[in-house]
Length: 497
Image: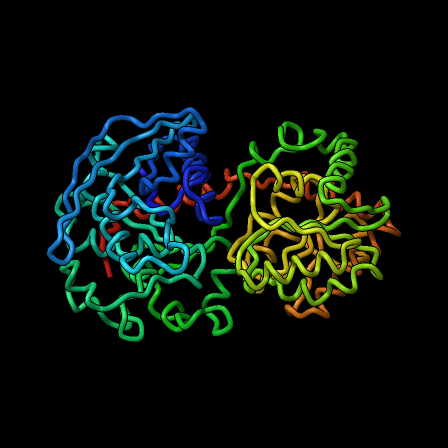
């Protein structure tokens, strides 16, 4: 079975968030499950070249030259490929007119105005070149998030003759980002106006690229079971809840995994001391190193909490800011790594000056520092207002760092909070709070700090159970492979209503 994953970003070559990590890790996991041949299609940005150079990697020669028309303009491009150790080949689409820019989706001040043209052209190029690049027609195009949302309808309307048996799967990584553009896109792409309906890609008199991906793919997935249910409700549906309830014929939740080789405390080159489930002494060394790096002091019974996050309201950073003055009384120290909204960056800089004994902040991001936070903290805080899956809580548990999470989406699915009595009896992996208010967050932090201080045996059990859990991609990849196989069953007809 040939599987083509199509994504606007792929770690470590281009990345703004969790989508890039999934677009790299899921294909690698699938490639280990025969009989599958897996490739990734993604644009070639200038940032990709910089990463390739830093890794000592070289792309292959230009191949699969394509020309795509858009609103009377022709865009020419080609693909250059890289074979990874996993056996997956990444095919980078080189089209300077559309992708020779510093940002993936946006410049310094705003989104690129031609994003619809950029990513629709990339989808067309992938459909034109995939058969030649993969040595045969793909059985499944697996499309990730709004930038690839037009691929299923473009396949149906313009490429079905060359790809008569290809099926499409569309994954919603974050429903909040939908890709809405002028309805003139219908004419620009020579699509039928019959697709511009409430059951199709129309959304408040615009083309919604994410909605198109759902409407015209043969199966839609989200990145956790709870999120698949949440997005059918007004609270989390981002104005698509009725469409997802009544017009989405197939919506499945399949939880993400993490790269357990990258996130392995026993072999992590970025941390002060290695450790594993059987010997956790190295975690104490990592804790001390993290305190030195962030210029904090914390006794062994004081809870050291880490955060690695985008500074955004969605991530609940405003809730965290509200409870910073209470950290001292709770015996909590907080280290934060991240960047994002300018207002929140400035607020946390100020808070770290005023409450310097309890809060230390590094505005920015680098992978090595993130690993040190995961390894050195006692607990990991994720107060997201919504979280389709979340990867941080799983990485934290790999390092024996107990998660404290808002009980939504994938956070609720992956972190088990059975209550303190059950924790004392050997159950659970972390702490929930709900709803997303400063009071509930304060209560959860105080609860975790109290157990950490007064019940070290219970805390050690939480650590051990998190470290023993299987957070690899293997189980999720098997679910996806089963879905692909069902779509390729003889009785299934592509584009069936």
